[in-house]
Amino acid sequence: MLKIVVALDNGIITEHFGHCDNFMIFDTENNQIIKSETIANPGHRPRFLPNFLADLGANVVISGGMGGGAVEIFNERNIEVILGAAGNAKTAVESYLKGELKSTGSICRKHQYRDQCGK
Figure 1 (tube, helix red, strand yellow):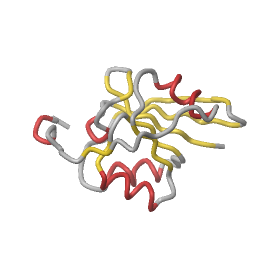
Figure 2 (cartoon, rainbow, N blue to C red):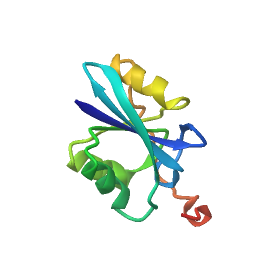
Figure 3 (cartoon, helix red, strand yellow):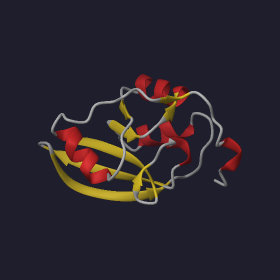
């Protein structure tokens, strides 16, 4: 089984992983989605979210963009990171399962939104 997490804002894949509204978690088996659930983002703080999602059993994380520190933690925890994704979460997961969704490696270098997040 593969657990795929997608970072969302207003129901679509977010540009900024750490400040997303919620995460949609897909359980997949034999390249098929067997279950999905949505959980609220428990808050953005250094090193927390990658470890939180790893502890939930994530194997893959899909987002539009993500800071380099988060990418490093996911890599240390052997979690694949797909960046540059956009649109619908289920569509993105289905594309990933078909081998069609590839990461653009779009890492956020500036955290210009840091002070705008109320979470």
